[in-house]
Length: 93
Image (cartoon, rainbow, N blue to C red):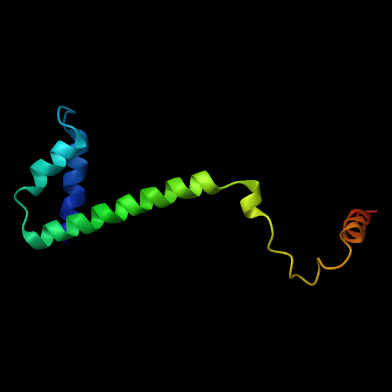
């Protein structure tokens, strides 16, 4: 339940004036927390950091070439590629 309290406090931060930056506000809040609660804060912060890194990596790596492939072992898409394209094109005639 300590996490719920953290989220409530985080909402309150957003409502306060922006005189302190987020890091300063975080330091102010955590200075009085117990060690077990601090461990939860650290765990949550590491989760957010890893999530952000993963999102950045995924966004940077995504291209059409990264999406290519996947049908090379399909029974429907084997054989002569030109004949396959012709068969698919002529399917609508």
